[in-house]
Image (cartoon, rainbow, N blue to C red):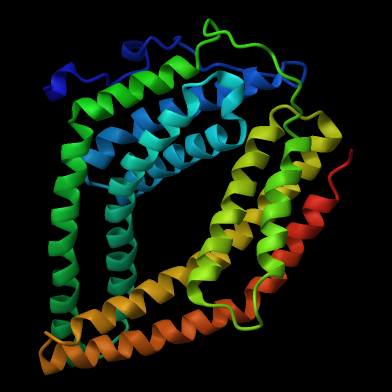
Length: 309
């Protein structure tokens, strides 16, 4: 399939001119459909920038839109029919390609900032180090471009758009999206309580994913809540965002340190020296995040428990 034949606009996917809206009086299924409608429009809007690579933020926002759709379908997909789970799995396929490039963007951007603070004599070696990852990113970007020009991607877009249609009726199920926040909050609480005093890095990364799911669920629930509940949900969204930031910094530091270790075997002495300096900084950043993440978790837990019944 050629690029020209792929759907690139909401109209080409059969979506209405204006985004779908849902208010507190509407049933939960309307809110789920409205959320999917908003996010697929966002995904389409950021796709051209993702393809061009001019601004890494476009790829980041496209990935965020995709993750929100996956989260909605995981939490409330049964409301829009049996097709939700296959679509969620396909979104995961696309997410892998977006995530691979995004990880390089984060790493390269951070390394450039760190190296800019080094002495002038270490700058050339630092630039050679960054160039390695730029080359690797180019390979990952080619894989992403291939995915975005595939029939599989075109099919995925159409399947998501079908889930947004009010005409695709399913039996209305009693479902309170605000009450539904209890489940992701329980899972996050259970994961926190299961951690040892000095958790493995992978466990903290998994904890961040739990927090992200709670945040996305809260964003969905906010549109269905009346004024008092909506304000409390806003507090929860803010707390989960802070929680994600702390654990995201931790994961970025872990990944950067591991990348520095990976280059040492083949690096020349000057690049190896710079990589060692960077690794030391990243381990310090990791330690800082480990010292603060529990306080951010307390804020999330407090905000979740404050939600009025």
